[in-house]
Length: 420
Image (cartoon, rainbow, N blue to C red; front, side, top):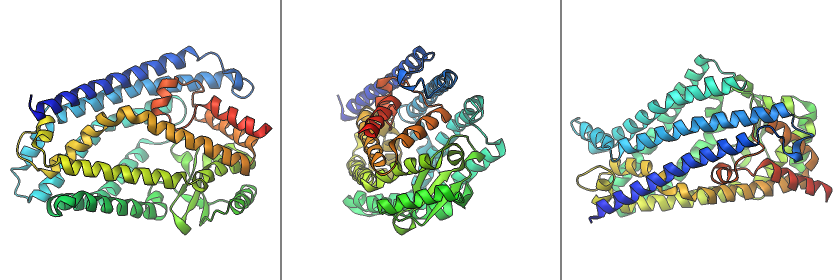
């Protein structure tokens, strides 16, 4: 058996395994949430109404069932583009154009990106205007949705095409260590986006106003002082323009860090609850979770680029994924690698989720020490209710997909911290 045939067999096996596993996990989630739909967990009976609990269950089931369509479409696109000959056909058609090899490679990557984006766009519309609308979360107009899509494509093109061109140029011109130089360019790009996002990118989509609520501002500023955290400003974002979901986040880095609250969050939470939610987010920074995740992400991207550097010279890699011909072919290698990568990494998802949930528990404990744990519990319950987050996820589905711990275990720890 040739190396290409062996690689194809491994790919098909993992492709089928990951697809079946994703469908099985979705089935488990729908069945488990449905079985617990009518009974509010004992820990929440005094906090969550039966109607809110049923709404969260129905919302979760609807989203999970729709994710099956998303999963099947992704699988179909992957198979068509690889073993179905899609990438080979696009690459062959681009060979007829009077372009340099670099620009043909750029055109190949962009063609596949546009094809995949166009195929999934109807699903994004359905998710917003049918599912989110049905459960009362969507506040977007179709015009605003189209504007967001257009802006996202434009920003992605302005930022992504230069990076893509640079990476492909390095692949063809920088020798055997191109992957190291490409990694340096990728890290620099991430830093650039992080710097540009608060002041140039985010305002394209939302309006940001200084936090005007004096009570909330005073509590937040005292919290920041206690925790030794410097921020350039406190802002409120018009999240209600698109959705009734609430959130808060940090953006930027260094002295340019900003704290952003969704207006939907501030409309529902009391001042002490906002303080507790922010204390949780501060915990991620003070406990260096952001730094640790960034380091792991950077090391992971370095390892993957080094792997791509090795695979790009192997004819069996191309042939095994449906593209016969000589090697290296850098644009083809990059496309095939990005398409096939999720098949080989899906089984590791529980490890990443476990690592993230551990950080969430630690940030909760930090918040309990620097703010009111009871206020954080009250805020979380409101957020679970407002966002229709199920209180009874299937444990195995949660282990694969949920970056945050289940509500019951999270609140139980916070209440233990409050009593201690």
